[in-house]
Length: 98
Image 1 (tube, helix red, strand yellow):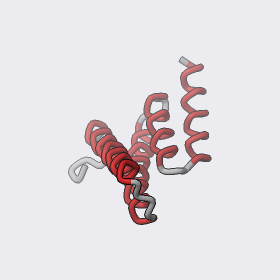
Image 2: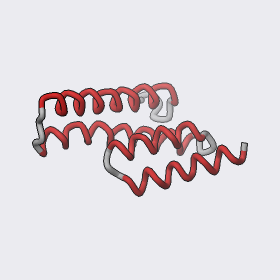
Image 3: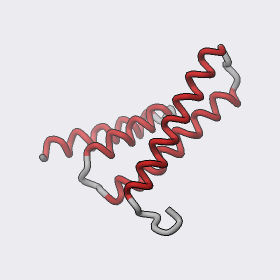
Image 4: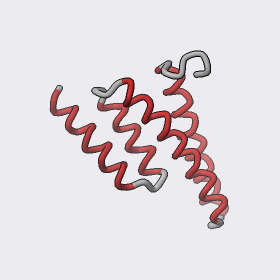
């Protein structure tokens, strides 16, 4: 990404990595019964970072409904409900066009 900030494969890989890290941290926290704010903020940060990379991907591939769905998932996991709903709506619109 340093060489080419719009390199699609790298953006996908980094976004998916943050999604997986967030999921793993959330699962570990839930299993341990940890309800601390710092723990929940840590996994939310990974989902927010993933959303940032998916946002860049939808800028590059505006007509790809899959990227919009991935973005919606990242938003939903980051507790960004309104943005998740907007991304799902966009994905649905694109699917109807194809």
